[in-house]
Image (cartoon, rainbow, N blue to C red; front, side, top):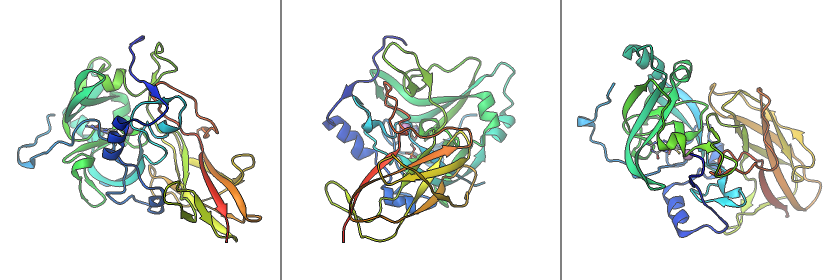
Length: 340
Ligand SMILES: Nc1nc2c(c(=O)[nH]1)N[C@H]1C(S)=C(S)[C@@H](COP(=O)(O)O)O[C@H]1N2
Ligand SMILES: [Mo]
């Protein structure tokens, strides 16, 4: 793969990226108020087209779980130079109540042969990416698939899976970045070697430069997000907050381990205070946090929050650049003005 150019960079958002960004929307940050993200507010990322599926002739060749899912490209638009692709800021995340069957149980039923090492999931959607005609496909090492709480989901938030989220069946691998969760499943294939499809070998890898083969993305790094307080300006979305105590709140998650702490800064990251963590709704769901902020006067402040997980991962102040613009979990910054 070394030497194959897979991603460009650019400063201004192009019309092509705007086209992507209107198809693929983020979760408005005020939706962090919901423990389970309502359908329509859950973020959306579709590489090709949403397939039209007739359930009467759909087949798959071969309870309930709440999980937070985040796109590996979340934060991409904040890199400089900016890798050209879906220009996410921070809102490519959501939490859903999935209903389906255990992948582990299904694989056990299928009784893989001894030589099987990887499981490939194929979606019905087809398109061209970087000149390569493909189905959307991703794999998991068999051992990883058997050890995980992964499921084949046919329900979302109490109803059927909607078309844009993978009707009639999708994979959900809790803790892993979004690309793992293949939608519109058509087939599951066991391989006796590592899968070398486009989305595995060229997309979704952390690479320092074009000559670096890099390493594959897997689990979500920790991130805390804050519900922007006060009221927004229409164009800049900068916030105005009235003087007096202000309860800051948000949610935090990590695919590596439980959230251990969330800290809040109101001075752009110079000093930090510990936030209060809420209850963990489910093992794979985000965790709520709150912090009472008492501004010492009127004027400008930069609010930040950062999460740390039990595996010792913590959010950086500045992101580490990579070719595809992945896994930017640098702390969120919210400029606010305190004014009557
Ligand atoms: N078949 C298929 N599955 C897919 C995708 C896709 O384009 N096609 N996009 C992936 C990516 S990159 C992400 S982040 C998640 C987004 O899931 P959502 O749109 O349900 O939030 O789906 C993943 N599964
Ligand atoms: Mo994604």
